[in-house]
Each structure stands twice: as structure tokens, then as C-alpha cells.
Image (cartoon, rainbow, N blue to C red; front, side):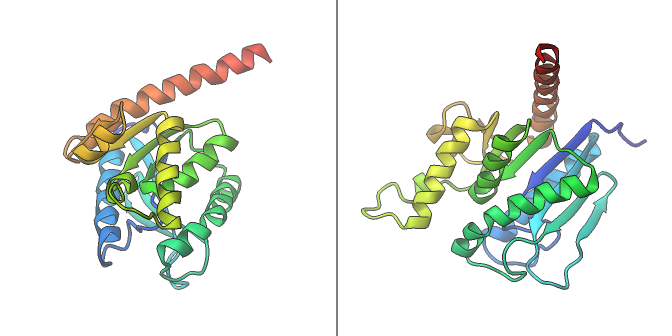
Length: 221
């Protein structure tokens, strides 16, 4: 029996494509994690659209994984594998493409869940422009990596600043490792096994809050 749909969620993973797992390094780990998470959330009733960027012009615009879960690719930067610096420069294009997709499809995403700091940057921009609830997952913290460094690269500074901004602005922060939990007070630590159940509760709570805020604004106006 199919679960009743609870609402739309945009699961954003800019640099790690959930529909392309045959990559190397951190991106492949995050790709697998996001895909598993999206499918799990769909099974409990959420309509999950996982947004990433084209890395090949021949890639499909959309890939269906199972009922209620799909990957959607947006054009942001060159349709090719990009370095972290190049991906960072393409983030404004990703935000623009995401908003255009919403307008074209007629789908609004009250819940935006970003994975890793590059996606977090996108989420912060969207939160400034739209009435949403932002959930952010830290995968690897720049503040941990460069804790003892005497000099910090420019991109690393952008990462650290974005992670701090996510902590301040996101409605919920999730850390996938103990270091993230200790570095960010109030974060939920998770080994991934219980993430779907945790997020199901969090999503429902935030969606209820958003509805209350919306109707409060409507009553005032």
C-alpha cells in the first residue's frame, strides 16, 4: 500500500548526483547517501525531488528512482565535472535555475534540505527569497579540516563562513559525525541508520510551523 503523500521536499545535492553513483571520493559517498535518504523518505510518504547539476550535456533532465522520488538536474555552470572552486562560482546559476524550475513546473517546495556546504549556500539564498523551512546536513566541516592550519585557502574560508551561516539561519541542522555535533550546538548527530525516521518527524513539525506562520501573515494582511 502506497503511503499518503505528506508534501514536497527539495533535497539539494549540488556537487553529488544521486543518479550517478560511479564517481570517486566524497561525491560518490554523498551521492549514495542522498539517494538512499530520498528513497527512504518517499517510502514514508514524502514527494522528494533531489536537485543536482548537469555534469554531462547528454544526461537526462530527470531520473525516476521510485514512486515519490526522482533526481532533477539543473544547468549551473558548464555541463561537465567541475572543481570545487568552479562549482562555488556556479552556485548563483543553480539558485536561478531552481527558481525557474519552480515557476515552470508550478511546484513550490516548503521544505528545502541541503547537503554539504555548497548546497547550504543555495539553501541560504533561497531562504532569503522564499517562505521556506531550511534543513541542512553537515557532511564534513571545514572548521574541523582547517582547525590547526596556519593559513586557510579562500575557498575554505567560504566553506567555513557558509557552515556558520547555515547554523545560524537553518531551521534544523544535522551532523553526520560527532565532530559536527560538538562544533555546532543543537545539531542532531546521526549515523544515517535512523535519519529517515528522524527527518520524518522534523519535516512534519517544520511544515506545521510554516503553515502557522503563513496563516499568521495572512491574518495580519
